[in-house]
Length: 255
Length: 261
Image (cartoon, rainbow over all chains, first blue to last red; front, top):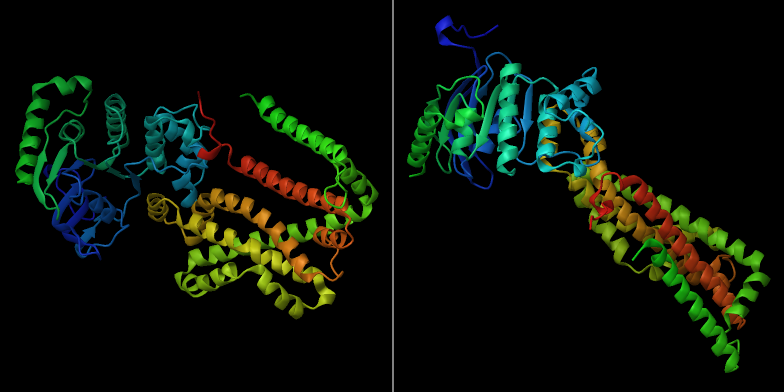
C-alpha cells in the first residue's frame, strides 16, 4: 500500500523521489545539478543525454552506491529490492552462468537460489546454458546472464546503465523486446540510461532528457506508446512522431 | 607442430648433445677433473646414490617448507593489506627492504642469530625471505584488481567485507597468486641453495653442500651429478606448479583458452 495517498486518477504510487539532488565529486567535477524527479511504479523511464552528463551517477545515487552532495532521494514506500545492469556484463569469470545469476540470492541468503536463478536464466532465453562459463558465451548472451542476475532476486526497481550500448544492432533489438516482456510480466519499474534516441523512444513510457555536464533535466516527455510494442511499432507514424519529439528535445538540451 | 613433435624434438636434441659430449671427451682425452663424460657423471651418480638422495631430500624439504610458508605468509599479509590501508602503508616499505637486501648478505647474520646447531631453521628462514615477496606483491595487486562494478553490485546486495573478500577478491587474485607461486617456487630453491653455500662448513647436508664438498675434492663428476639433481628439482617444482595452475584455471581463465585456428 502507498504511504502517500494516491487517488484513482493520480495513477500508480510514487516509488522514488529525487528532490534537489546534486552530486559534485571530490575532484571538483559537478556531475548532477538540482535534479527533481518522481518515478511511479511500473514506469519505464529512460534517462537520455550525451556521454558524461551524469546519467550513470544518477543511477548510482538511486542505488545508494553514492551519496548525493545535496538534496534527498526518498522511497516513499520503503527501499525496494533493486536490480542493477551495467554497460559491461560484469560477470564473475570463474563462475558459470547459474552461479553468476545466483549471486544476489546468495548474498541475501534467499532460499531455493538454484531454482530461482535457473528460472531467471530460462526467462532470458538461456535455458541449457546454466553450466557455461562467461568466456564460452557471446557478448549478447553474457548481457542476458547479467539481466538474469538482476531479475533473479525479483526486484521491484531495475536500474540499467547503457546495457546494450556495446552490442550489435540485431542483438540489441532482440534484447530490447525481451526487456519489454520482462517489464510487462513482472510489473517492474525500470530506469534506463541510454544515449540512443530510438532505443529510448522504443522502450520507454517516459523519456527524461538531460543536459551536458553538470546534468540537469531539460525535458520530461511522456510517450503515449502502446504497451504491446514489437518490431512493427518501429515502423508506425506514432513511433516516428515520438522519436522526432525526443530528438528535438535532445537537440535543444545540447545547445 | 603437434604435441608429440613438441616433446620429441627437445629430447632428441638433448640426447644428441650428450652423445657428442661423450664422444669429444673420450676422443680428445679430456681429463675428468676438467670435464667428465656423461657416463662418468652417471657412474658418480650411482656410486653416491644414497648420499645424493639424502641431500636431495634435505634440499627438497627445506625448499618446500619455505615455499609453503612463503605462500601462506604472503597471502595472509596481502589480505591484511587489502583490509587496511594503514597497515599496508606502515608495512609495505619494510617488505621491500626485505626483498631488495641480497640474501647472501643477510645469511651470516641469520646464521649467527639462529645458531649453527639449528642450521635447517636458518636455511628455512633464508629461503622463505627470497620466496616471500613475489607472493605478497602479486597477491596484493590481485586483491586490488577486483572489478569495481562487481564490488558495487556486492554492496548493492548488502555483502559484508568477508563476502567481498572470499567471493570476489580472492578468486580475482587467484591467477596472480598462481603466477607468483611459479616464480617463488624457483626462488625458494635458489634461496635454499645460496643459504647452504653461505652456511658451508659441513653442518649442512643438502645438495649445495654436496657440490661444495665434491668441488673441494676435485670430484667433478659428482659435482655434475648433484647439479643435475638440482636442475631436476627446479624443473619438477615448475611443472608441479604449472599443473596446479592448469587445474585451477583451465575452465575459466583467458590464459588457458585454446586459440582456434
